[in-house]
Amino acid sequence: MVRPLQPDVAIQRRVSSLVGTPNSWTAVSGGFSSAGLWTIDPRDRKLFVKAAVSDDTARFLRDEMRVLAGVNGARFLPEVIAFDDDGERPILILEDLTEAHWPPPWSTSQIDLCFGVLEDIARTPPPPTLASAAANLDLAGYWPSIAQEPAVVVGLGVVTADWLALTIDALIELSGDANLTGHQLLHCDIRSDNLCFSDRVVVVDWNWAAVGNPILDVVGWLPSLYLEGGPAPWELLTGHAEMVAGLGGFFLSHATKPRDPQVRADIRRFQRDQGVVCLEWLSHELGIPSPDGSPTMEQVIEQQTH
Picture (cartoon, rainbow, N blue to C red):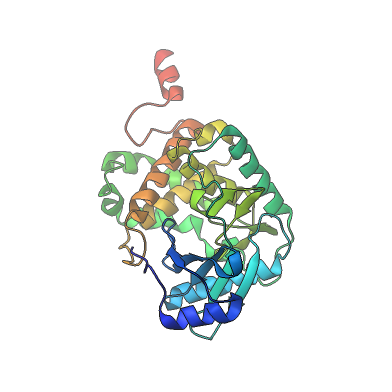
């Protein structure tokens, strides 16, 4: 995914009419969004510009703006400077956060702060128009689909056909019990490229926000934290194997899909790796075989007692 160094003339004119003519445009890298991203510096203030470049990114920006407007004033939200929707390609201008700390690396205090901000999000009244997480995400459906075509996931090289045959019934049963229902505000995409640390913790990219069970945000975040050098998920959270199984199926199922060329090239590998972490988490939580074939501690103890 290569973003343009500068936007086209139409975007430049629209931004200038909103905040004044920038002295410069600087393309922003990172993240998985395919929207146009730049920092600008009109009137001696640095700002962040997100511009839709497709129908999908236009929908994402409109969805994000509905949340930013509906949860106005929360400290964990970025400050909205301007929003312009011409009916085709909306533009969102936010406070600039490029000088904040965007993990990794993670410190212990930052991990604690992230847990705290997830609690703040869950305590915040959601906008009334938000859909439910259960309506947007069918965690019960991924492992049954994988069971129909196991070779697709086996082809990722992270599980064997024997391992899948041994565990698939348990994974289907577990994920079927995942409870997404609730009335709390959820971000639904918590990971390091969507949050930063400045004078506060700021969470960005709210286009997937929903209402539901807030444990979804925690379970969804911890695999990526582990991949970035943080603690193992099973050291931070226990007792939610159903959600872990459902998200493991989600990640591995998406890892097998063709990639949109506008999205970062490593997204499928990242989803695959998060799925593997979920399976390792389940092996520690429930004692099922590890996906790499090594026995869990529970199995070692059982073998030693027989």
